[in-house]
Image (cartoon, rainbow, N blue to C red; front, side, top):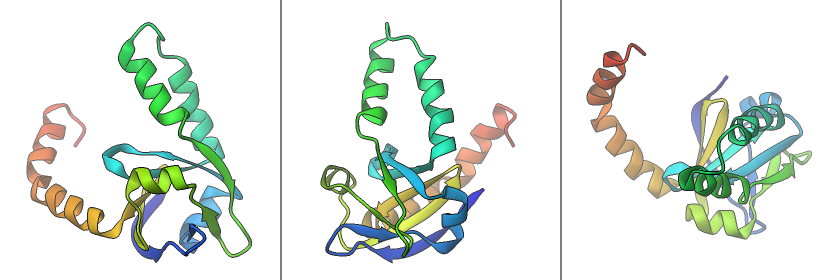
Amino acid sequence: MLIGEYQHTLDPKKRLSLPSKFRKELGKTVIVTRGLDHCLFVFSAPAWKKLAAKFSDLSIGSSDTRGFNRFMLSGAVDTEVDSAGRILIPDYLKDFAGLKTDVVVAGVNDRVEVWDKKQWETYKTQIESQGDAMAAKLGEIGVI
């Protein structure tokens, strides 16, 4: 399981060093794609295959399904983790997530999220203020 929050920097060549705690679980090849809330999602190859299989099971008759498939799949790129534990972030993904130099790398169960540090701080403040309300909604449907 991928958990934790780490502050890193994106170097001038658009390389990001993955936290050492994440490297073992992610493996040598990772898939980077557009994430929700304007961050990037990073998946291990097995986790990506599992998610992509779910997408392929969805009906192409639905506009929302087609749009979400395009959003996630067309933006995806597989990249090798180099010997220093870094991955290359393509320009289009860097631009999508608004990444500057300072970034936050967060483990979220089966994926890693990459956020611009300022955007993460804003988002985290917002989500922390809503924690009790979210817990209540999850309790209503039996999750917690």
